Image 1 (cartoon, rainbow, N blue to C red):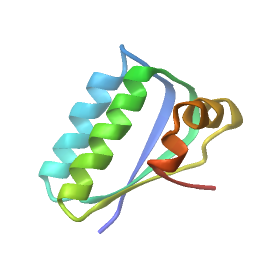
Image 2: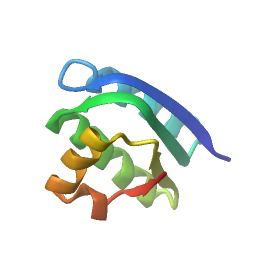
Image 3: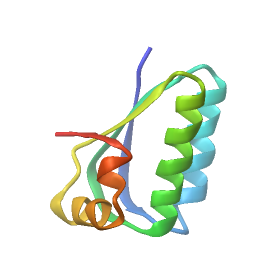
Length: 92
């Protein structure tokens, strides 16, 4: 009961709404445990962080979980500076 979503490129104000729509479609279809593979994500903006936070909160209300993996050092720096490394489940 786990879905793996491989994200690629930039998670910013342009791409995040479309990704969020697809993610919430998966949630509505019963996928409440998600792994976001960030191994090909090279940029994360505040819009991308909002998408991560809204997804994580929604899944928690459904007794699900969001895990983020494969985060590169630049994206991890953004997550750490914003404190998201304490909010999200991040694995290597």
